[in-house]
Image 1 (cartoon, rainbow, N blue to C red):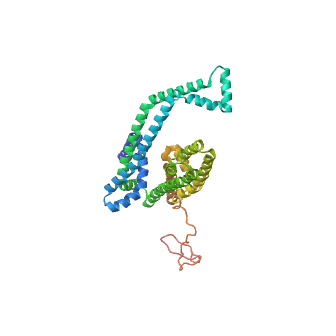
Image 2 (image 1 turned 135 degrees about the horizontal axis):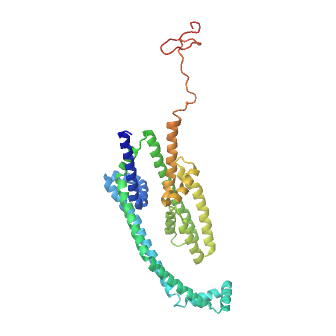
Image 3 (image 1 turned 90 degrees about the vertical axis):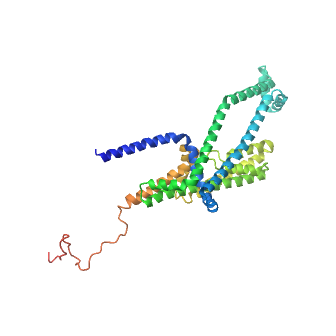
Length: 387
């Protein structure tokens, strides 16, 4: 083994080892980094437009980063405070439930129903009073709630700290990608040992796929919010505009989607207004979502990717299964890069060896007789008679 071969083996072995160690260092932060990359890709057109006005890329990146931070932090603070107040109210209700007259009221309501009457008779046969059983269950629920809060309070605080840390890392990465992302992109593209035409095929396909997926998600989220929001308005849901906005935001979630909003709204309608209004809202939401998810969403995402609809479907579904929420982008990107590499392979290794159909036949000089036989390269054509 010569020295040059040994140097190559050492270099690539060391590169693989350091790459693996780099992955180990960045692995805890891969998810916020991935979201920062996608968000920077989405905000890049706004950065270019703002940069033309302020004439400073750093200033434009700072402005957009602050806007994104406030757009996430302020709603999160409001929602957290609202959830905390509701949780405290629920805990107080459970703690004081048995001390008030609510137990007897619940018992009277249950005994007024057919199922409650049979249950009361069944318990009475065993010497158990229905009101005593309800009181016991209420006390047990309050104790379980208190124990759960004490047991998971520290883990909830640590999870909150982890969320804040990841959010800070995502914002920092987002800022530097906005400011210097084009240089990173050019450097990564220059490292690929491929022909410039092949590089364009791979990188442009990836860019078009991510743009199409983001465009499709944003369009369908807006349609979800508008159409289901109209259902809220018709059914008389209070704060329907705010709930429509939450529904549209839920449409961006890879898991749960808009159902995390409109299902609780339908339950609220059934309890507080009427179950017929709830049924109308559920039917409207299911029909609208079926049309948007099965027709508009694939069309919006497919435009610009050149991927078949079935490939896009498996890219979305399999990406979420393999990579989690980020897979809604990673899955289609894998399909798109694979398709681009297949095109590069076909152009480089298949068409190069295939004779193009209808290729022109080599021209025979007019001075040569139709039946002439060509001699070796050093000779000259002779006729059959001379031969």
